[in-house]
Amino acid sequence: MKPLKKDDLIMPYFVLPGKGRREEIASLPGICRLSVDRLWPELKALQKSGVRKILLFGLPREKNACASEGYAADGAVQTAVRLIKQKLPGLTVFTDVCLCAFTSHGHCRILKSKVKSPKSEDVKATLNTLAKIAVSHAVAGADFVAPSAVMAGQVKAIRQALDKYGFRKTKIMGYSAKFASNFYGPFRDALNSAPQFGDRSGYQLNYRDSAKALKRIQAEIKEGADIVMVKPALAYLDIIYQAKQKFNVPLAAYNVSGEYSLLNGNPALALEVLTAIKRAGADLIISYFAKEAAQWI
Ligand code: PBG
Image (cartoon, rainbow, N blue to C red; front, side, top):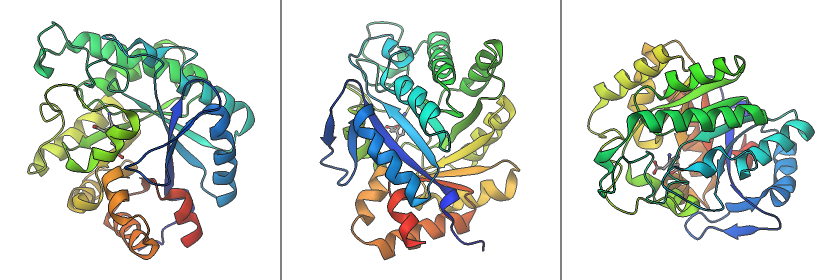
């Protein structure tokens, strides 16, 4: 196999609105929520480590039913991206495009009625909102937008909106095969995005179903994804392997928060797992270990 390289790694960050804010995340030791000014030294250190790719998640000032903070021009992610593109142009910036951090109910969708059920999703409004968020990230200068709402048609809707507003060069990384996983627990804590009622099993994939995962990847490639993703990674090496054999686009794998929690504190174990993810076929690995791992490889 080709060895694991720094260029394979993408480091995620949680960006807070405002200034002077740094919040520890109990379930993700070593990872913090940071306002843009506090993020700055971290990014410089990351660049020094040799990792050149980042994935940004934003936290809102307030949540509401239409997730409007997601596309605010002065939102946390938009502000961070603008600054990074001005001052640290060597970084490739990926932005997460989803609604769960911005909706009051914590689902990745706009819901139609006041009925408290994730089943009352408003497909059109959700796709429109995802597209608005993606365009706002592109305006700020994001290189890749990464829709993670697991909504059929999300990549197509975003591609069309980006093209319409003149962002043909902004690329899309689809969270194409995203399983309803128990490994996301610490992340929901980090982003304060746990659903207030119901769960995400209605839209995220059943982990028993590999055929559906491959179909979703194929569908997002057809919709225009430049990179596709399998998530989580460690318990899904078979899906990564099959996707790599079957499709001819760059493949990312997300070494998610629960995997980080399990392996944190044991670099040898973490490096073995990251290497296994690469060996299975991932071209890119999103990992909370990215910065540390740069020192191990
Ligand atoms: C939400 C989103 C999730 C993650 C990335 N984007 C969580 C979820 O679907 O509940 C998980 C990442 C991780 O666990 O590290 N759209």
